[in-house]
Image (cartoon, rainbow, N blue to C red):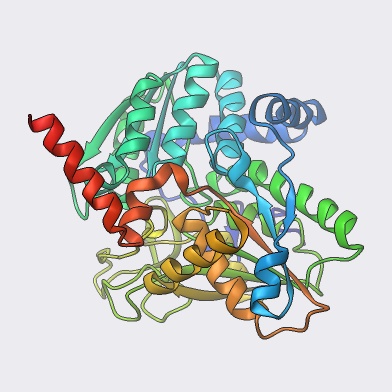
Length: 416
């Protein structure tokens, strides 16, 4: 049975994970979205329209790049990167967003809402809304607004309204809650462009469907470059959109190991990380409309998380990835904040590439394992976003004193 071939009576479930647990008031709207999506999936011209849009507007296909210097530095397997950082808006998020924009047009909706953590999804959604003529509201935790101010600047100047969410931990999970509240109030005009492979059915499938363009391209490109498939494929995982995108290209290839890298933060212990499946701090529960592993207490209350990367500190994980972990098809590892900072410096200094902090989690696991492999072997890592646009967060992670002094000087100029 394929990943999206559901059993009778189990639509939207991946093993025991997934489902749709929403207020009854949202049922008709979600069913309308599901039916529209399945109609589009059954229409070959829709996928062609999507691919053409991504080619002409976002610059796809993105290349696969051999990281020769990094490979030689580590002395093990050959390392390759799928360059999603070269997309318009700087990350893989635009794939799903432009696809959902096409869905929104078919639905006849005039307004789009979205949640965002690192700001990449919000930036992409604001861009799509400007391009397609939708009103746009982005919900973002107040903590993330503060640490991702450049992305907030672009969202607002693209015409979006950015709402800083002050509830809870003031991060991604709280932004999702606000989106759901908004959606209940404005169903007739509004489409919720959820940004990752989580949430109630059909969102995990919708996001995975559009993001699979990454894996479809990468598989063909890798074979053209090397004449074979990679031994291992790596991707960071917050909710799971970029991982699902890349993994789908290789999921039927039993000889290719799929490795997900979560936010290890400061290490094991509640409140110290966001590694739902690499550590043992998450349990199965139902929240935000679906069933998966969440970092929660015995009463089902969501617990605080931590990561240097704003896009990886979500309390849950894609139900599809939870299923793939349980069946043994995907292995989960964790990368600590310290490892991320060290690996970011390494990749920048050897290859001249600047992966986003989120993407660098994938590089940590890839570099760690490539160094122990044979030179005849190869690994592929998804560079899901670029870090230069996240300069404030990256500079903080690298503890750059010159940057700090620059900020102090600019603050003094404004005060004067």
